[in-house]
Image 1 (tube, rainbow, N blue to C red):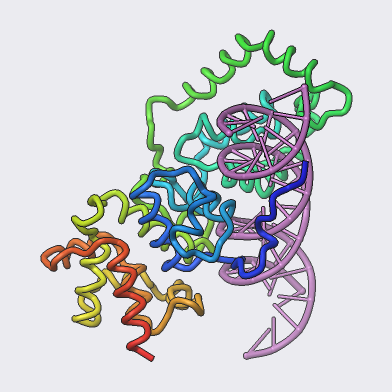
Image 2 (image 1 turned 135 degrees about the vertical axis):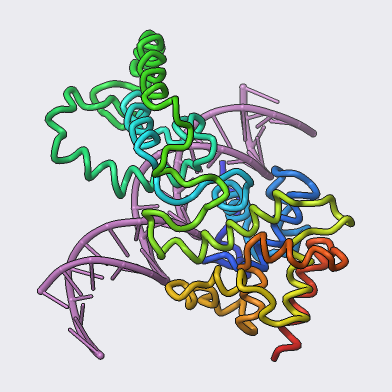
Length: 290
DNA sequence: AAATACATCAACCGCGGGCCG
DNA sequence: GCGGCCCGCGGTTGATGTATT
């Protein structure tokens, strides 16, 4: 059967998401819930394909995602699970609910694979991945099924390694999303994702407004209101705050999007706007700035 | 300070599978 | 049962940032 035309359609935007697009997507999902991705571009006017919308939501905008470095605990857990399940990242991600399969996959490819290589001799026999040609898929799954108890025990061991500390010292708290070992390179997306997440955490149903809108309004009317706004665009990442050519009528607007919840809270007294309204305001401000 | 190499990660692509008419 | 549509997954790529020379 033929594939439906999707991302190769004319007029479909590709590449990095802008904060404006994020807001549009988040507001849509907030209103309609995740799913029916096919309808998202049509209903929101986003020039993105449905896949791209789904990916953006599941990997970055969805609330509860933790970004930044992986803790030792998580690392061990991933190693265990990868050995058990192979490269079934979605399955592995289900054991780390605040991590996305994409994140885990990247972490595996960039860190763990390398770590394992030198000591691969100690990993014998090699983990039965789905791509292992020697073991047919059905065979492997049957084997996995029969070994399920063993697997569970191994998993329990992994989980109990430091079960006493749910948040080890080296593990950032969910509230602090950017930073950590991944370095400044994660800042632009981490920042925007973080803000969207924060936006969601304090989200009010459409019509009752959102904190970010209030923050935007306040920031717009009183440029450079709070130190938080500049803090979030700290020296090392200042350029990242306006690294997006689509955003950016001014650094003020960028800051409005990149400011943290404190800044938003500071502005809480302002009449709240809905996400769509805030986005429209943003667009208007941008146009005005030019 | 500039050039180059390397590392990281967000996003894309293509495929498989499930659902529905 | 068949075909079309949509979603989700895993592999891969390309842009960007960082380290090294």
